[in-house]
Structure formats: C-alpha cells, structure tokens
Length: 373
Image 1 (cartoon, helix red, strand yellow):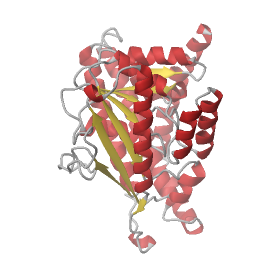
Image 2 (cartoon, rainbow, N blue to C red; image 1 turned 90 degrees about the vertical axis):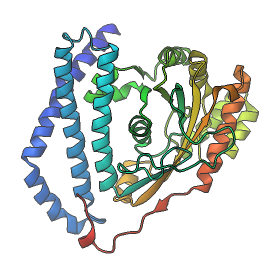
Image 3 (cartoon, rainbow, N blue to C red; image 1 turned 180 degrees about the vertical axis):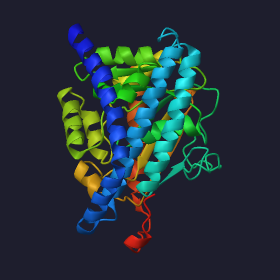
C-alpha cells in the first residue's frame, strides 16, 4: 500500500501537474481556433453561448491552476527546497495566494454564469467584490449573531448541495471574513494538481473512502486542534451533496443502526441529508474554545448532474446564503445532547431552505444583448 501511495504521488506531481501546464499553453495558442469552432456551433445549440461560456471558464480555471503551480514551485525553492514550507510565514503567504486566485476565478465564474450571491445573518449584503462590508443586520434566532465575530476560532458546518458550494464557502471565509480555513477533502480531489500541492502545505486532510469512521474522526480531531483566532475549521456534516437517493440511503442507515426516532426526524427533513455527527463532535472536542457557525444556502439545489449544469447555462440565479453563529457556551455538553443539538439545527436549515426557493434573474431579451466577457 505504501509503494502504491508513492507511485500515485509521483503520477500526480510528475505527470498530471505538467500536463495541466501543457494544456493551458495549448488552449491559449489555439484559442482563436476554438473561438471559431464555438461561434460556428452556437446557432445550432440551445441557450445563450453555452459553449463559449464553458470554454472561457475552462481557460480561466486551467490558467489559474498553472500560474499557481509555477508560483508554488518557486516558493518551494525559496523555502530551502521545502524545508521551511510549513512554517507560519509560508503558510500565511500560501493562504494569501489562494485567496487572490480564488477571487479572480470566483469573479469570472459569477459573471459568466450570471449568478448573484446574497447573504443573510453575516456582515455583508450582496456578495459583490465592491460591497464586501456593507452591513446587513441579522434576523436570526437569539442563539445566532449578526457577524462572524473576530478574535474567535470557528467550526463552520455547512449544508452540502449544488455545484460549487464548497468553493463559494471557502471564498467567503477567506475574502469576506479574513479567515484561514482548515478543510477536510476527499482524497480524489488530490488529483487536481494545485489542490494537491496547496493542501499539503497548509492545515488540511485528505480522507479516503476506505477509512473507518474512527480513523476519519481521529484525523478530523487532529486537524481541528489548536485553532487560533483567525482559523475556521470547515466541515460538511451530511458527507456529500444532497440527492434524493442519498437522502433515502441516509434514512435507511439510521434505521439499520436502530435509530428509529432520528430516522423519522430525517424523513421530515425534505431538503437536507441527515447529518452524520461523528466528525463535527470530534471537532467540538478538539477545539473547546471555538464557536460554531451553521451555513445554509439555496439556489442551485436542483443542479445535480452534468446534464443539469448544461441545461441551466447561463444560470441567471440568485443564490442565498444564511449564516448563524452559535457561541460555544450555548452548545450543550455530552455526545447525546450535542447530537440532538445538531439535528435541531439541521431541521432549522431544512425549514430555511424550504422558504428560500431559487430565484431566477431576469432573462436577457436576445442573444445580441447577452454578454459573456
């Protein structure tokens, strides 16, 4: 197994990463040809310049990846061939680099896909680059607060549904709240070369689907330990994106475990998966000073497959995010009480999602007025 891991690492670093850079160069060299092909196909395809939008997003993404990897290589050399790469200074500059590149990619994705993101319960109004600190107030429960208070470590538990929700959440935490996220990722994401390199230099964990529950909780606890005032440990308690089939399997799993009451509660939640409490509870034990932030969002819930993404382009949607901050003193002690507390919040999130159905932005009247860039 160890030899296999080394071989996988070599393939990712020595084959996949250079291939992405070659692909980026090729895309830019052949971009005029690609534009001609896309323009020729546009009249026979439905939608408003769907292929052009996808092409531009691919170009932006692989360009950002390639730039990032070149910089990361330079920093590895500058840090003494990696000897100091995990010191506090180098971790800080890595966070700054990721924040800057995510800002560029996120801005382009939001513009090309015709999306607008609004928030409730946080210090911002509309999620726009030029309006990042406009006050918005808080209409949430008394346990919540109107802002992610500075000076407190955070455990951020988010609903998982729709494409790009984790990307949006991390962008918001870094660019809006000036937090340094610690993230648990599936090990398959390590095949993205930039993600692979960056996440091995900052606090993060790649979790294999073959890990036992106790091993996963141990890794989560290790990652959540030692949070400081500007850290945010990010976790998705549902364990995967919402789909009706995953919801059904989650309810069956609770019944197999003999948790009939929890299964009935999960059946009443129509918009979320039943949370798996083990990871969040491990993080709570490892970070006893951290407040908890619950995050809900809606807008792209129905976009579940590649076909759905293609059909929806451009999306012309308003995505709404809701933030609740719960002070640590208001979180009960004891495993059973904390599970009840988590299920109660997930029921709150389910009700909020039901009340905030996706909103479509006004459609442009003609293809001529559609703007891609």
